[in-house]
Length: 137
Image (cartoon, rainbow, N blue to C red; front, top):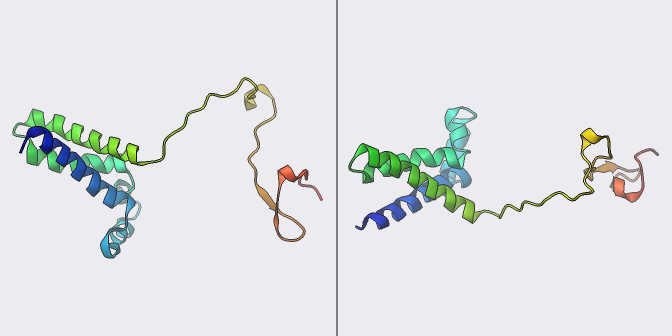
């Protein structure tokens, strides 16, 4: 098998196994049960972090593919990096917006941006602060 093809297959396999463990319950909820058993310890935290787990999964692939240790280390990081890129590509895009000139920060003593939330009204239904009610009845 071509070296590039081996790398691509290793990266895809790393992404698939890592995605299965971090984001899915697995067949017959096997992964969900393992995640519950792992709790909040080392393995539980590892099963919740795609980037962390991809390092461990890619290490197995790198050992299988690399003939020498220095190549193994580089391949290990490259396979994990490729799996992380695949994970980023598959998610919703991150949108970064510049704050406008009229934005006032808390430290400058201006009005804060207010998060809309509902408060129980007289009828038991929630009311928004945007409805013109300042919260006092």
